[in-house]
Amino acid sequence: MQNLTHILICENSIDGILSGIYRAYESRYGHSHIQLTTADRLGTYELFCEYEEVSVDFQKAGKVSRTLQKEFGQEGFRTLCEAMSAWESPRDQTREMSKANAVYKTVALGLARKEGARVLNYLSEPYVNRVFQLSRSTYYESHHLLGFLRFAELENGLLFAQIHPKNYVLPLLADHFCDRLPQENFIIYDDSHKTAAFHKAGSSYLLADIPEADQAFMERYSAKEKEYRALWLEFFHSIAIDARKNPSLQSSNIPKRFWKDTVELKP
Image (cartoon, rainbow, N blue to C red; front, side):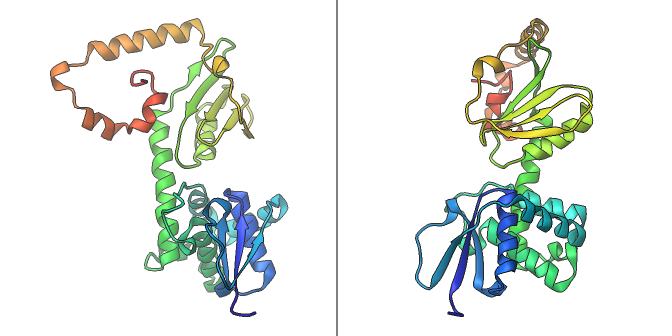
């Protein structure tokens, strides 16, 4: 039936959504008859809809990735990746305006008009506007974490940092610190998404799923690290003025969800 809406259900990840976009073009149903969604945004099944699960295919995702980098440029592709990495509540938007579908429709619009990244400036277009909002959310959180992320030196000399972000910002942080700390061995562990970035001195980084983290390993600090932590806490408390404490301003400058990863504010 031509009027059926084809719902492609993909994994909630960059490669998952890119695989869904590949399948959308491959199906030839027509963009107006296709919607992308992720499994966690599926909701209840509807009449006059045909549902299809799309498995992650890294080869197909890579083809879509190369096409988008060519047509949208590196900055445009980064914006799309930031949008695909954003967290969204299951009740945040309708399925049509979910991130998977918004990215897909924006890509289709950009490729059809052959305007590449310029289409991302058309904020009057609902799908493009949604991509902009999602991308901004990921960018702002990664920007916050670039300032708040703390590395601790472990007993074996490894630098370790733990984060609890809403959005999947780990690749953005790993890219940054690979440039800033190229000769250091470090790990950044994203406890929210159970993923870690491993960097070996002088090389790039690897991402790996870590379902169960070893808390004892993460707290095996070196003697120097313990000393500096104690000194920092002493300094932090000594300069505080009780009469001028402003919890609202403090939580505005450093949102409370970041506190558990900062030594001086950790509960």
